[in-house]
Amino acid sequence: MGVHALLSPSSSKQWLNCPPSIRFCEDIAEKDESVYAKEGTLAHTVAETYLLFYLEKMTKRQFTFKINKLKKEKLFSDEMIEHAKGYANYIIEGYTDTDLYAFYIENKVDYSTYVPEGFGFVDCISIVNDTLKIIDYKYGKGVQVDAYENTQLMLYALGAFLELGFLYDIRNVEMSIYQPRLDNISTFKMDINDLLSWAENELSVKAKLAYEGAGSFKSGEHCRWCKAKGFCKTRAKQNIDLYENNSKNINQLSFNDIGSILPLLDDVKRWVEDIKAFALNSLSDGNKIDGYKLVEGRSNRTYSSENDIIETLANVGYKDDEIFEKSILGISKMEKLLGKKQFNELLSDYIVKPPGKPTLVPVSDKREEINTASDDFKDICI
Image 1 (cartoon, rainbow, N blue to C red):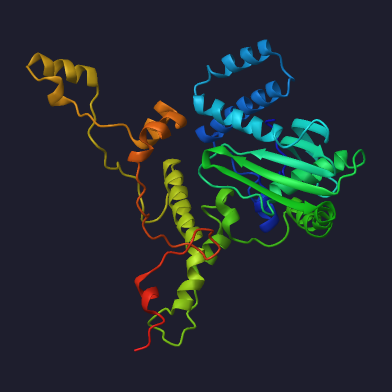
Image 2: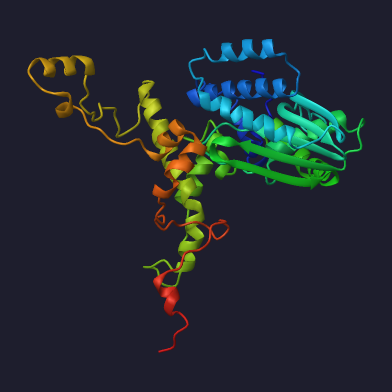
């Protein structure tokens, strides 16, 4: 599964929003695979192994051999097993033997009918009654992924339908994200006719532009994974021209002005960091940027060998309680030590959760709005 389509499902948010960016980035060298990507690949293999075993597609001996081999991997952790079991149980609980018509794991799907040379690999496909189910296992914990109108999942579903639709009476699609390290299970449902309408009227048009390197560049949240994010002029212009002040008071932003700017600031912040990272990497590669150079940054002192430090101090009379600090484990580590059940049984009475610091979020956020002092008096007439 090391081969990816040019117009892949995972990059679809980019090429659907900014069609020419894919060809623009085509000749930019790929960075070495990050440790997070390698960890995710390993976690997927562990999850797939548990699912195959739970489905009795693998003998106990085969399963034990495979898991023991995976445990030798440098990035392996017991957490992967815990989440793999949860993933397998989540899938199996989603159907019964009487209504499951088809089941596929790590299956290649082809959607080239609508997207030139388009294909991808789906973690889990099943058909239950008249519903095509797509499940994508996300091991990352940096960004929470939502299934709602998720084009990666929609492409998976489209490819699966094109392959299986003539065999089964599929009328609905159910697409889910299973992201265990963020306790995130998200599901989006749509009628199969709506999926095909999207493919015909929107997907195919933008995919043609992307494949040809045509269309207009557009900046947005989708720039996060673009290889040109640190030097794209369109993105730079949008962020530099963030706000044109049309306010009557030219010296002060109104609350409405601020409200229009706030949704854009997260991308501005990412853009600033991307520009700085690109500049740093460029200078490291021997390029020149007017007015800037690389210098050695600040660093903190560290012990070269703690064992030698302990032995040296012991030899001159210092005791352990003088050179060591003791502290109780943090809540997360304590819960991991005891297990959730025993942790709750023994310590739940001693755990407090104070109110969080006020945080600025859009009104679409599901958390309840906190009461402010001004709210207490807004209906009082003076």
